[in-house]
Image 1 (cartoon, rainbow, N blue to C red):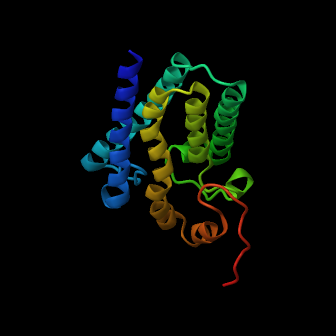
Image 2: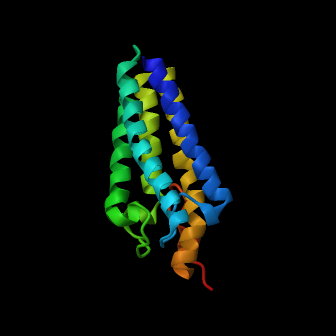
Amino acid sequence: MIQAISVTTAAVGTLGVAGLLWSILRPELAIWPLPEGAGPALRTRRALNRALGISSSVLLLAIVGVACATLQPMSGWQRSVGLVLFFGGGLFALAGYFALGTAGSHGAQVPLVASGIYRYSRNPQYLGTLFVLAGAVVASGSAWTAIAAAPMGAWFALAPFAEENWLRSTLGGPFDAYLRQTPRYLGWPRAKRSA
């Protein structure tokens, strides 16, 4: 049963990665992020976007379920490291979610947020989720958890590349300055450059 859940989770996650790669390579037909507007073509893309979002949430829960069901005997420090990654990543992602707001976190155009946690990472929600996935794998010590988590990890690592051109076109110069100053994933802000 666990093997079937892991393989199914990996397969659906791989479809999500394919959709994201499509969005990176064909931004005019992207399913993430979606442009504003209406029409039949956008309705189809919006439906794919919603399905991807819902399946991502279900997949994350499935990965955690697989991790819990396949816990392997291991040293206390390994399990502790996994739990720190898991809960620390969750808090990091939530901090990004609350700083950006619900609408912005779901792809709506909102003003640039470059303070707080967004000063150290342009993508704290994605990075935090990567830590959650890594924590689940480490804490469980299970290959099945790793198989289930790998495609989702790829999705969260690639998502910023699908968003950056869209953000550049919607936010303009301030976003370009933010790109130069703030690391994509994590680090200290770089000094402002004079024009």
